[in-house]
Picture 1 (spheres, rainbow over the protein chains, first blue to last red):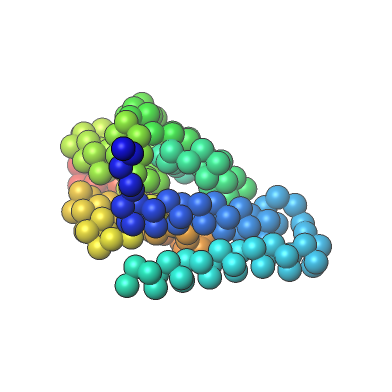
Picture 2 (picture 1 turned 90 degrees about the vertical axis):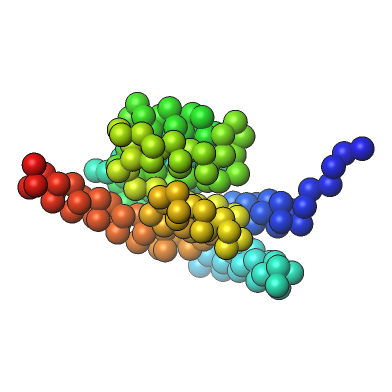
Length: 63
Length: 134
């Protein structure tokens, strides 16, 4: 039977994936991949802030 | 410009971090995608700073850090641990092994950039002082 990963490992892996989302979003928002329109900035900002909210939820699970 | 080695097994993440460091601050970046490769590249290239993940295949970040600090040629290179591991034990272990700083993923880019700049400045001052003493 396959061993189940620990909660610590799952949270670590979720954080890693969220880090990909926030790092990529920041590259766009900071103009490092070219300038965005205001509308594009708004939606990329939504992606980043959703990822940040998941981090806060993870912190609650961790307590 | 300072040369920074990034050691992390998430290739897409390394690519993004490289882009951030090169385009926003002009650093030269050397990527490595597992602990063994990171250690080898560090010994061969003597970067000015290392950004190191912990959970990696082949050799984890703790072992990489230990070997870097045990090696005369690499022990003075500042290491910033950048990891998704959040336990206090992980932080304590990294600092005890000689890490200069510890940042948890996901992180804010300005926080990382400030810590890199600070670690590079401290290393530069230490090097200058050592030069005066010899």
